[in-house]
Image (cartoon, rainbow, N blue to C red; front, top):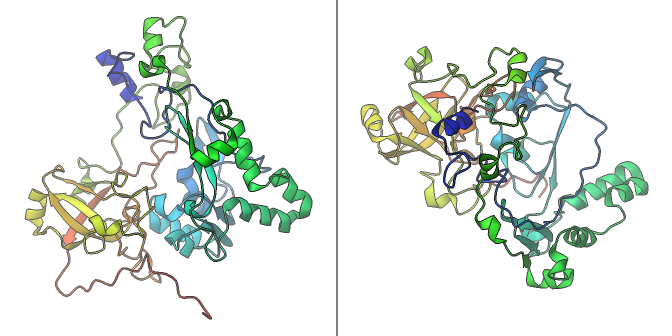
Length: 439
């Protein structure tokens, strides 16, 4: 909101090269588009359970059932959660405050995950369905989050390894076992896997250029991008004629003040952009104990936690651990040398990381990219030190506000120290394969 107001003050909203944008790396709204229909997704159906919780409140909901919180201007009672079924996400990889999440998971009756890899999330599961990787299954997708100008045939490269199955087949077999033939047919709509792929393709504009068989042979179909899309400027029409091109706001204009938001009367969310003192920041008293601000950006060499168990880690890891960037002046004060293993810590947890000493980060700030596979040194103790450098052992689950309940992972203070000479560093085990009982 503050970003929108600042852009409005500059006066460049609706001009080429100006204005503002959100989620520009993935699926941002109001972007240039080919205008073509791309493939839809399979419907998730209708869940008889209507209650939902913000993604940031998973641990809190498990540990505090029936607790009432504010969310989107309403009161929300957190449900009683007894089981987690995790598919298509690495819960232990993306949730903040790993130690609190682990305490929560250990109270559940059952945790089920779909995984092709032996991830930290899989290790904490009671049941692991071995799912295929993208190389082991046929699929369909589109390219260009904004332009949406290509549909791709994702043809499998190898047959599924051992007993692994694609997610669709896992759900099909579950439907059959739980509800018999009728439930299975309701899930599959009596279609085979390839019939689903063909049906999704035929709902796009692809068939106007290629038949499905030709598309599948070629591997893609590409739509022409119209000239007006190449000249697209976000909010240009609104700037030229705000009366006939109203925005989807209370007033149809850019809202610097919202009476609707003000009427919620929330202590941490006002009717206009407001600076609130962060719970953790370098201007607080807490900085006397934890004098570094920690940021946790998306990784340069991974897709979140994906690829952390591959040769890619050899490109940038320091002694097998996630690097922590530290300003060279801060490093000199603490006697930290480039390439050595250090401990980063706060009240929530501790981790080992490889020191990356550089002038390309400001003093008083540390940076550890998110996504390293969590590796507790001793899982039997409370809040064990992470031997891999998984930054979420340090980040906070504190919400951005009681309105949105979003994650504020970059609001975190930490300290850093050299390891003492007598401190032994255990081997890193997070990407090791499991021991198979009876094998």
